[in-house]
Length: 76
Figure: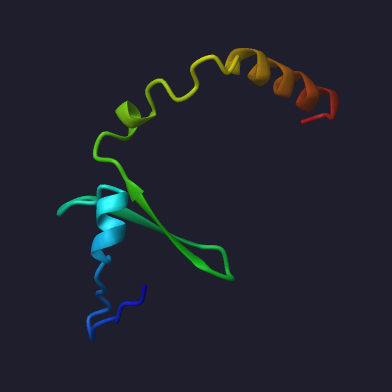
């Protein structure tokens, strides 16, 4: 898909992408420039609620504690 940029620096998010990622009027987009490419990431209106349940059954506390222990042993 391809879009144009207007004189004011505006562009249109193509309809198939808006539908796939549920992007609606008033939603926020984050632009990430890594020096080689640009990524556009939709930010949910209720970002914390969107994350709810994502780490279920992941043993995240154990992973966090293991990572901290390793970091301390490296002197960080």
